[in-house]
Image 1: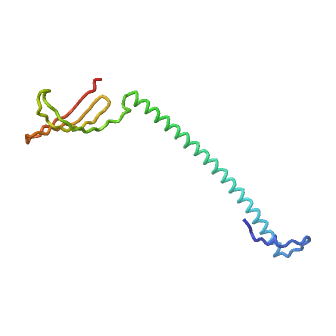
Image 2: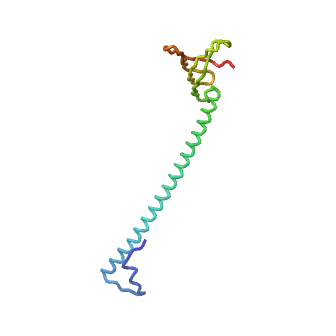
Image 3: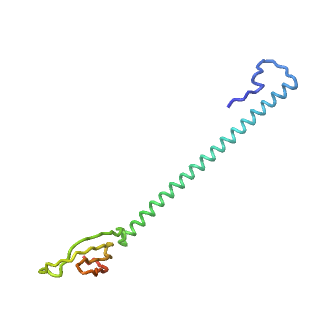
Amino acid sequence: MSYNLFSQTDTIKKVVLSEQVAKQVVKDLLKGDICQEKLLLKEEEIKNLTEQNEALVEIIKTKGEKEDIKDDIISIQDKALGWFSKPKLHGYLGVQSLSFTDLNVIPYGKVNLEFKKLNVGALLYVSDNPNLKYGLILEYKVF
């Protein structure tokens, strides 16, 4: 920061100043004092903002750690309750006979939503008969 000040251009060792020149010198000196005060205020403002920034960074870090701990606790609780695995959707196509000796097979399609211990789905049998047979599936896993 540089100012073009009148008092800096008059460098004679012994000086007699007119009233007008003396007023300009006083103005220059006051400007320097005001600039010094502004500088101190700005430095104080920067210091305060830096402290606030550090405090906010610490708060964000603490909240992030709390969130991680919360996620860990939820994961542990889900595992304890058995909810940690998401349900899976499966689709099957196959054939079915009514006995081992019967060679007439019935094609079918099946859609299942599989949970840890429970399966829910729908079954559709396709046959020569124009009436399609369908049903719901509800299975509980025993072992």
